[in-house]
Length: 115
Image (cartoon, rainbow, N blue to C red; front, top):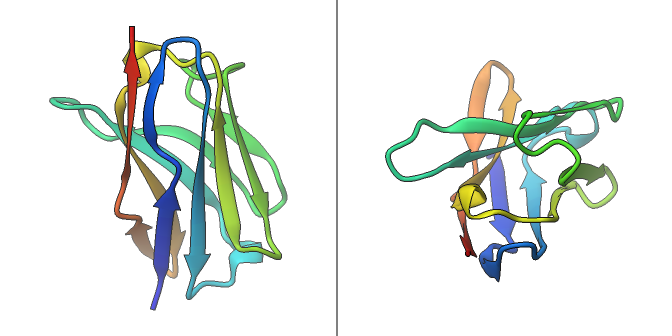
């Protein structure tokens, strides 16, 4: 059974930082690509950042140079370090992996950035 459990969301002022965590189980984590998506009210879910099994990363243009995705295979955990947060970053953030042809999602964690 694949499970993705997120933590670390909250309320922060503009310019502040938050770190999201996602603990994965039920997959061979070291060969899985992992990603963070977000969805703001009235918007479609969008990709924020992805990290591949070899450590390569890609980011949405809106978060480049502010957010950093990382992983630790021993802990089967992926993190999203978010710095210089802006009110536009307010959304529910979801951890994601595609495993054996299926997409799996965490329960989501709310990030709210006040101006």
